[in-house]
Image 1: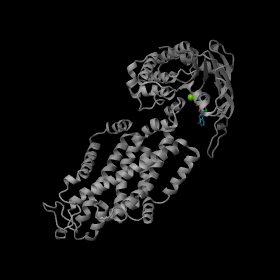
Image 2 (image 1 turned 135 degrees about the vertical axis):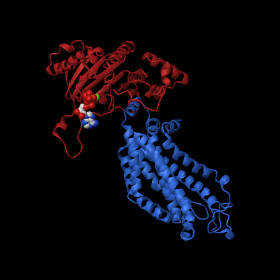
Image 3 (image 1 turned 30 degrees about the horizontal axis):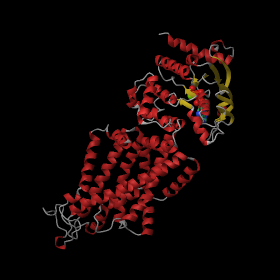
Image 4 (image 1 turned 180 degrees about the horizontal axis):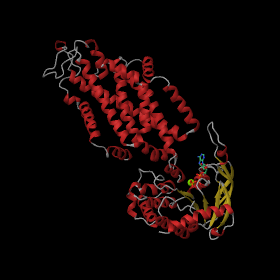
Length: 265
Length: 302
Ligand SMILES: Nc1ncnc2c1ncn2[C@@H]1O[C@H](COP(=O)(O)OP(=O)(O)OP(=O)(O)O)[C@@H](O)[C@H]1O
Ligand SMILES: [Mg+2]
């Protein structure tokens, strides 16, 4: 059984207000289908506005699709009962692009990482500190960083905290919505390698959303290429650059060339 | 703990210009708290043989028409006005936090119904509504307090609801939902702590207006009753002597003016320093507008 099945998901944003433009009619995503196998990473590649985050929100149970189904571990996410949903949530976590806005500015790192633990696990104060230190060290941070406030950390460090929080409950699937896009190249690479290592060691699965071909290529096993709200091609990551699909070539080509320019110092 | 951190967050980064009004206000507050120690005489001791005397060593600010020490009455009046204002604002903030977060966080029909009720109450000028309620219940400080709480908590509810709706969309609130945080925890841990700095500023501005309301209603004989010393009630009692002994109404008038002005200066400065204050300042301006009529009336008398 696949870990996650997205079956013919469609969602259009209805424009509210008196002046509807024709353009707004096809904003959203249409007939999105893909599967994520346990322990693998599906890359979702597309340009800005293609609908990547929309798909992420639907998968996370935050945005009900107009039609189609999300089966997570065989259970329909949007037909599940409340208690079922709470249990499913535990196995379905997220890392957002902007590390600062994803954490409560008034909480310490310890409270931030401790939040999912407190919601699902009864740990003693001592155990909690031990688990949090382990998670921080796993992400290449120091254990006593847990007493810092978010404002005392760099964007890259804080994104590591966000990842630590997402994997605290050992979820089955982590949705990564552009987790490294606002970081510099070197930090991007480090975090991607970290994510890859976590996946291999602990068997996490990812839905990795990005507009960056190189990042997608580094982390994903399979890539779904999204153009204008529909998936135009799903291919293995290795053969991403050999794609023959024209709009897929355009997206891969355009992105990879500017990436390569970035590498020339 | 969170509250303390929030207050530190607001107070921590202020400069001398904010410190001066805070210190002045603190002096007035302390004078009120320690009125029993500071007052030279019993504020309610009637001695007609000393009536309407000018300042003297025994009566530093002179006496009123019943021979009571004006300074002592002012000091005790500070206690009465400030504690009443604090009581009313605390009640309003509590009501506002509960109903406002309920409406804002739940959304949908609950929100719709609560907001329509608020709109209906807001449609009537607040002081007129308070006066009507007191007319039904009879005059007295308790009735006045309840009437003002009902009228004022609507502003707080609306303000807090708006903040909650806004904060609910923040990424960290969405993230907390995904992490399985319960709605109650979400409101108490993520939403309320992040609206407290703005709320603190609104409260600072609003306390001034509540003090004006209390004085205005007491001046009209609807609130604090004689012989209890209260600034508005003192102006009311002294108004007969406006020509012969204007000091009887100037003294309480000046105190009201100072306290309200200081609270406004503090609130505005805090608002300017934290960018977050903008929606709240709008809320405060909105309620100022509605209360404009009262402001003028108060001004004429004092
Ligand atoms: N809440 C919303 N209401 C209306 N339209 C929306 C809403 N959210 C997104 N859209 C529209 O849907 C389309 C897809 O948005 P989405 O956020 O999924 O794009 P994206 O691929 O994540 O882009 P980016 O790389 O910039 O994050 C966009 O055209 C956007 O304008
Ligand atoms: Mg996006």
